[in-house]
Image 1 (tube, rainbow, N blue to C red):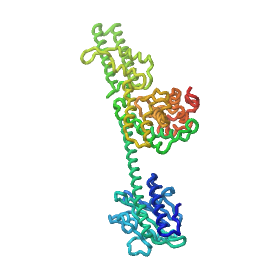
Image 2: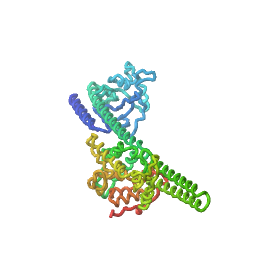
Image 3: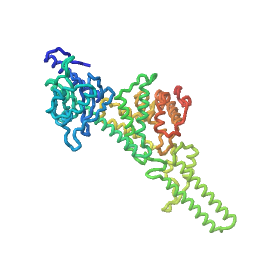
Image 4: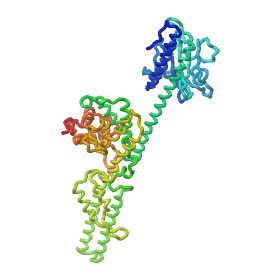
Length: 550
């Protein structure tokens, strides 16, 4: 620790202390760690005054003074700050329960009145009216003698007291007793307290703004998730997996050995992962929530069901008319009834088949599409007495969707969310050290072979964090339990699909290998997947691992 040399003249000594004060002020302006910042303030005050002990208090929202840093050199006491030893002393209330100001305690008086208190000997200064029960108890317990005391309020540029620096027992020489703090000490500590108050206020303002920013982006993510019950939690889960894989990549050797992730870069990636789907704010709800092929604002399968019922009643009416013509007895009547029941059975089978197709939970084989087209050749009589096709053109196109529930236009609408995401994020004024957020967030639908969207970037054109998020986004989607068009897949199935995506040049091969090798997926699965879906799969059974993509 820096110490002011002794044996100097008063002027030389003062110059040395002012230089130290200036050095501390410069260091305070550059420090961003709050515990270290407060430690620098108190230790600096002790050094420039040669105080044996010192405490830094901060004023909290509950109108009390909280112990932040405690140092007593002769007793070896070091609490708070960077020591990782928390201060156990109880906070000092600024007001009594009846509302009276706590002017009996020196530090409370300094904080409440913005006044400096300088006492040559706390035990002999009976006229000050302060309560020194606390120092006396400390002295008895620690075999110490508190003499001189200096309490200086820390007042920021708004005139608000944010803390108090209290110094104990100025050292007058190597073996002398403690002496009183002089006017030079007071001026120097006041200057340091003022600089420290501004530094603390600025740091708190930065922290408050960061907290506001964090809460804002999480509010956006929550809004996206709450917009649809089928995507709830996606924006909260992707950051967990993204950061886990990015951290693993920053520790990896081999192909990823040159990748590093600073604290600021990691924060940027976290922000990007929270905002990666912010474009979904403009995606229509009926598209996001489309649980079946025929769903728009409502599921049109009910209309199809009604048409089948109309055909069944038409068949019944036709049978009854036929019986009236041919009579109720005889082979012809039996054939009519038999044909009617066959028609009912056929209609029920077709209705159940269309209901199944409407779910869109699996890819549609060509023969299934042909059966849908065959059913579409039926006609029915609408309420206007018109004979019209059984399915409208739009209904037929949706029923023929190959996989999932979205038609080509709707899928394009969903895909366009990434375009909107890029537009939104690039319009935001991110700080210079967060300028990569749009790139990180906007690339999670790109492919390593350049066939992704919206920009068609290749692997070489994408940063490692962007490639990390692409894997996290896919794995979350595969394992999610809240999708309308599919059930959550087992862990083994999800990893196998990822492996095939590696082979197809969809995702980054090195990151995929790391994902498997380090079992990055496992803690995530244990937290977010149903236990019965977490099955065991040997890495050698996963397509694309550990062999080359080719």
